[in-house]
Length: 268
Image (cartoon, rainbow, N blue to C red; front, top):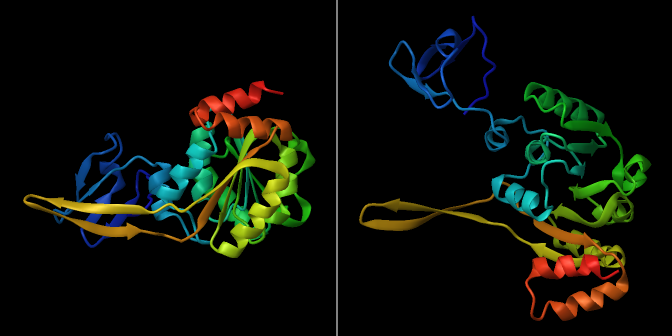
């Protein structure tokens, strides 16, 4: 699979033949187009899922299983303000941008200036520059900028030492805001969880595996486990008051999580 910028005089050449862009213009996404040799390709609309599969890898990236989990557990909806560090190759950032559209915004930071510049160019190419702002900043050492104090609905961290950024995250999040952090080492998870206990409640750690199956007539069998990069995801909620934590634990014995969360917001 390959991303292609369509132009009137453009040409795509591959082992299936030569494809003139002029034959694509005006066709609907999903159309099947043929080359002079009889080969064919499908014209697919650009989506975050497809972009994750074709982007330039400047760093290791998160793939669809982890990204879906992150977007859901961060409770991102249109209009949200999301902070992210680090940007890397922009795989997750692209999905975050779609989730906050049309009137939300993602502010993503990377300490590496050239990596940030490349990500900024990618977001311009994919039409996301109005939804994403890329900054150069060492979040572990400096924390998030003060302009976001109490403004963020959600925060995502992908850092070597995420525990150094957690105090800053706690200041940036609104009450009841959610933090999610990705780490490939269990030692990182343990140290982060210890720091999270000072500022957050409802701390949970997950491993997400996507397991595919091949289904054929008369038989079925397990396929491969899709793992782009192994790691653990930690999710935690910005606590309101310590007294409320005890009430939440009592309510959880008999109430669904969502009702408990709303009850916790009310008891202040």
